[in-house]
Length: 153
Image 1 (tube, helix red, strand yellow):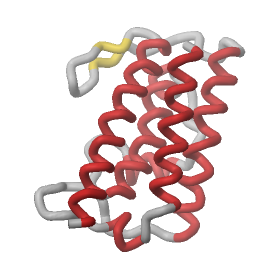
Image 2 (cartoon, rainbow, N blue to C red):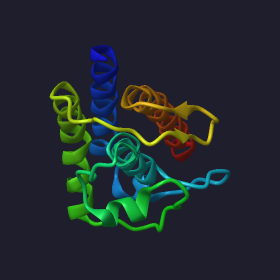
Image 3 (cartoon, helix red, strand yellow):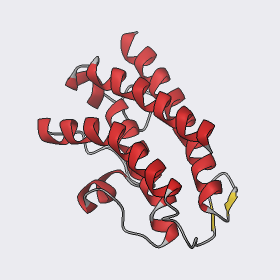
């Protein structure tokens, strides 16, 4: 699992650089042909990791429920964010994967509620969830890069 955690950490660094290097206007813009924005994709990645790993393990998530409500699967961007929310996501981008790795290494995840994802991948363990999360984050990084190109044109 070390490679999975390492890759998630590297992806999060890329997302943090994008977040730091993109104006609020660009973060919130939804280009023609898209149904979300860069901001939603980044925050969604943070929330989804917690839901896949902690919630499916029957454990509380390590973030505020308002973020879960705003950025979970099935939500759409509301076109707003605050400086405080952006700073919170910046912190969580880096801190949550580190906490998840520590919790995993300490054997924190004892049970898991099987779940079949939208791409029809059945998760039966926390290891499955962590591996799928990596795939999920890669999909959203691709979306973010496509959004950046669309906004630049």
